[in-house]
Length: 242
Image (cartoon, rainbow, N blue to C red; front, side):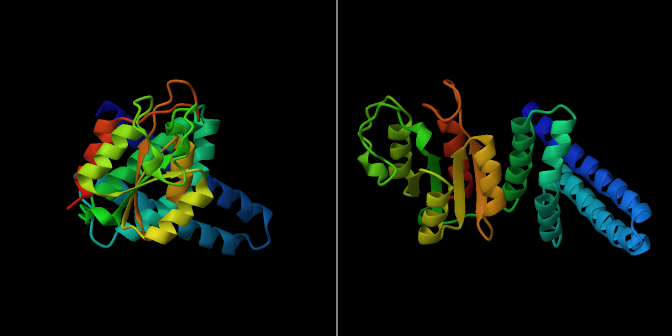
């Protein structure tokens, strides 16, 4: 719970700092350009709308309830400001993955507030290929059913979860494959397991589909014999399944 609050606080703070940076840039441009007045009016209007959306985000997180009519402005504001927030966070000495984690945390909280409930076949659990044991001879990126459940990685346990809840389960070899499987299955909810960088990028790319990110565990470093908290993943599935 403490980590959840810290991540939320960090991301909201970085969004606030990003709006301030945009305003200062607008002031600087207004002095340097012959169209300064027009630029200042446009930029000030955008910053003002961004500030209202930021206040709406803060109130939404505080109330733990989505305010009707404000979901779209909040989503646009986050999508627009996230790249700048990542840069600002880096300049302030924050690790990039820490900033990405804060973004994913806030995104997940907003998504879960929608309290959507869907059928199992409308859920896609998308896994990174690095979850598979590195020396395994069976290729699971083509078909997860090739997993022999030897116990050397978590894929066998994930197959058990799939059989219990009957959702779609797929291992993606990369972003292109992930987009293709989403296009083919057309799920209403995607629960993606990946590192902070891939999750943040995927959340930014996917539109019109609810995405919930579950960060993987990397005991041997990035992209090698990774794992996932099965309890967290199962809880996430239970929160959206009918």
